[in-house]
Image (cartoon, rainbow, N blue to C red):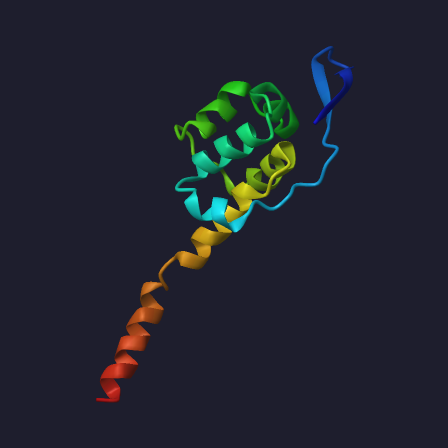
Length: 123
């Protein structure tokens, strides 16, 4: 991540201009399988890329304390921040983790009931 300079808006508030220079890369499947929680995925992605908390927070437009709480598991990671966090950490690990969890979820109750009813009819 590269800081392009400080910008001031018309009200005089200071904004950091952050430019992400690299496209997020996929993590190896061996790493994705070992991740247990979304906060662990975020922490690993930040640590692997040596990304500072302040830079990630500025890149996604949130405070450092908010990002820190997400990284420690004290705050859930909203779906709308997955893309920006992947861009800020230059890693798709967080997205890959959520994709893996969605694939591993059990089918919804209604489809399970339908499946079992079909089996009962066939008996």
